[in-house]
Image (cartoon, rainbow, N blue to C red):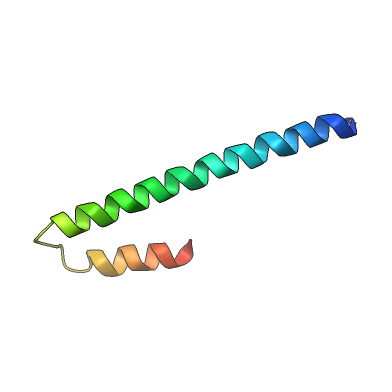
Length: 57
């Protein structure tokens, strides 16, 4: 069984990893939005798919 200090350290490590992951998601989302703004032609249905995927987040 892990000690309380070990569990607290694990929690801090997991929280830091989650925060880093969240930042990466934001960066990817911003890049997708910028790419969409720069793209003049779109594939039919692509916007609906991305909107549906974003709604799941």
